[in-house]
Length: 291
Image (cartoon, rainbow, N blue to C red; front, side):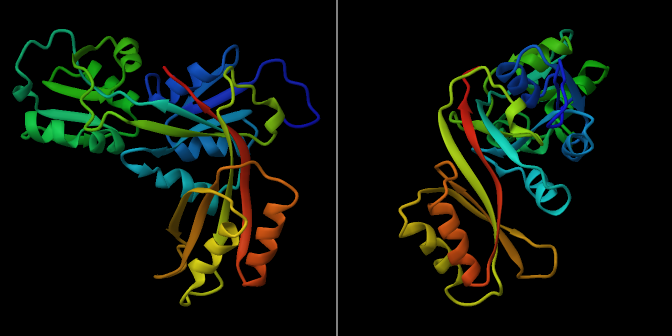
């Protein structure tokens, strides 16, 4: 749905296929909407940009593995869409096998999953399945799908929804290395008014993209000072390559407060006076879900 048009049923896109954590987040946050899966993050973002779907939900950051770089880089370099909400969900990784697997865990030849899921379970794999070959997939849901159609002694790392969707058994629950495992999902839409999450807002946040005029001593300090003396709390600051040459970076800054007409314009003006370029990526509510 685009501003000015009427749409009775919203269409929400997510990183699929069935059984991904993104689908789990979408199911927990929304109801009544049409839902469409996409094989990759760029495909989902492109679909929002092309008005094929109204809302896109993509992973943004994991507490253990950090930023999902593909999401950030694609939003910065390829398609500029505003972040209109953030959904935070707990992540529980399980070892999934076919129901007819009756062997020992050491007999597993391959472990399939998304690179972030593999990394979140590194110690478990190292200790119990060190000889298995790691196969990276586009999502945890895709990994479960592969295992469900294979006759080999292989396993997937994924969630309970993936096990249910593809008829797999949970061989071992909670195999992630750290208990406080959460993922942030970005909700993207051209019209923020259409986004209705069925939960109470836990916090509000504003994200900015900042580029420096050149790499000089004290540049980052000056950027941070513009927020510090205004007593604006930053929950995250991360550098990413500009892709224009070695040593050229942009910064993603998350501020723990909604946009206002005083502090943020003041920050922008101060940074631009230093020669920085400032782009607001979104000011949005944050929803912490327990699923």
